[in-house]
Length: 461
Image (cartoon, rainbow, N blue to C red):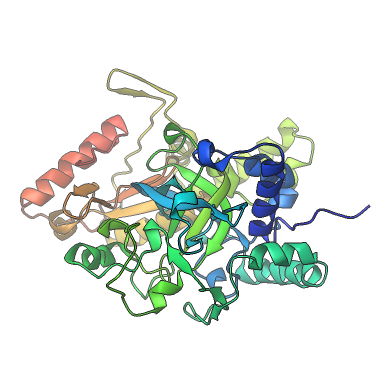
């Protein structure tokens, strides 16, 4: 008995089209379905039902983007920084008498004159970024991921069934060479393809050029991602949620071409015009929300018997470490440990139940700055997410702490305090000197006061 006629890992679009064909045989009607899932989500959830299977999927980040292949399955772990609304795309069309689908891809293929047999569907756009303040020890090494992925693709390259190849290539025969910052993005289909809303050849406007302000600086390692969501209720994913998206990595060859004045009717809003070389697109097949424990490396504690003695030894070691950082102040170390373990469990009116903010004072002036650095580094080594805010007059008078909505380009301008749930925030006053706050500084001070007291950040919408 042969295996499945697709490979969900190395050729996910083949699996999508294979399941689409099966759904058609079972009575699925693209003309009346409005793009409703035909079994793809269950297929991939079953295929990646455990952590060992999920771990085989390469993580997309600034180091792996150089070698991951287009049209393959990747994972992106990040925070939803902005929700860009919905877009329309050509989801299905009839080729002669056969229905075909463009779902989970950027390029819309359909023959000329087939508009009457084309179905326009809808998907959501989420602008996601690596979790702010994520510490490096929580990440897999790029070499480990690369070797794992190359081993898998090498094993599957020769084994992939021919029907899988035919499904992937059935949309056209012409090819176009393209590249993305050194990545091996090769032979993207051109033929009679036309772009979907999010990938149209739209002349650059003032709004589109302003969107470059949201892109990471060339010197940073941060890689944002434009995630396209299908078959998921809008209430399921919210702003600032930390999510692991598993989906198809795609590349828009139009970004490498000259702008065409004759763009099709599916023209995206200026706010979504982002170069795919800096903001890759991921068509989400399945996703799951993440909490801080998902970023912890596997430990023998997960398999060993959880005896009280083990946790007693851990606490003693941790207390010894924190006491040394705090100048051998055992009481301060106990408060710091309780502070690190605290969490908001609920709210009664404006009271955050479970909050334990901690203020460390009476530091030696000569060693104050050194202490601040040591404490920050210590917490970075213990916690998955940490963010440090330097409280100086200059910083408060110039910083954008709270996110603000820019209605001209319909984008949420991020602030330093747009962070994920579970992030530890350090307000460093060791460099604070007397001075005068301007209007921006006063607003920032109010925002910080509200944050410390209520564990909330006001967004300016």
